[in-house]
Amino acid sequence: YVGLAAMINRISEMMIDPLNGPPEWVELENPHGFAANLSAWSLSRTGAFSMIGDGALSGNSRIICTGNPSLQYNPNGAEMIDLSSAGVLGTGAIDILEVSGGKIVLGWTEPGTANTETIMSVTWDYTWEISANASITYNNGGSPNSLSNWTSMDIGTPGW
Image 1 (cartoon, rainbow, N blue to C red):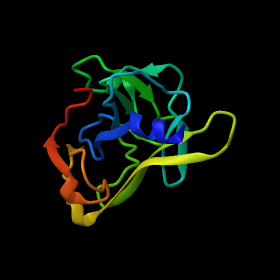
Image 2 (cartoon, rainbow, N blue to C red):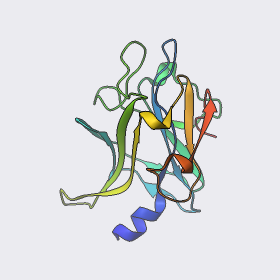
Image 3 (cartoon, one colour):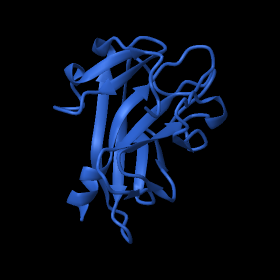
């Protein structure tokens, strides 16, 4: 069952250091043709953890986990989940993720247990040279902890 869950979602893009007040965000993708139940999924960083929520993520679609839905750039009207109250993502003057280094973990908890499996973990450091107001997009291959498997994009494309 965990093996099936691990295939469903991945972190596809992240905005770590937005400029001028917009929120930090992490985009999750379901690259398969069937819906994924969101109730067992979580996103965490060092010192903070949040379940993503109820509902489902349609097949071949994306969801934006954001530090502030009211300020989130969302040109395609993707579903959004607010993770600011859990302290996982920040907004405005409260930046939580640092371009100099950090870690984001996508987890899945087997229903009825407290066991959370790490589905995808991304750890970056200053050598990645992440620019302010640029997102990083996963190239869907290789280790997510290697800079060579991410592409930097000005402003970002949440929900695309």
